[in-house]
Length: 122
Image (cartoon, rainbow, N blue to C red; front, side):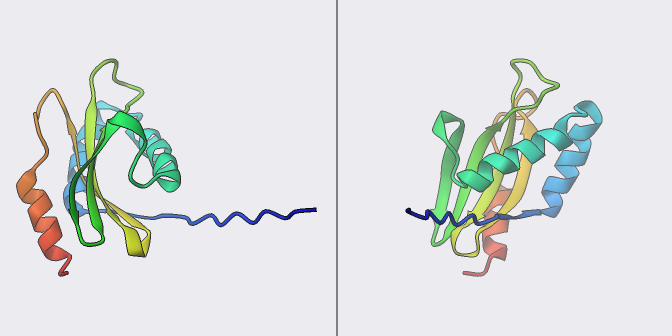
């Protein structure tokens, strides 16, 4: 009899202050966001860098990956949200940096990402 041991590492999730403000604003319009984020976290627990074409590594600095992903919302049809998060590999930590509606904003806030990376103090 062979015993297979699976090591399941739970990811540590954190929200940046900017993200909390973005989320709160969008939550007023899209009430399913809370449960949608829980589902998204399940995916990230399994694959922190994402799976497939809906995830894109924007920047990699040392042990930190900044990832832009398509965020699916049950309240939206064919309209997409985007979420930007940092995956800190050695700490098994994901910090959400930004979430935005693609119809209102074309790209992520590069200045915010630079500020976040600067605050990491590598």
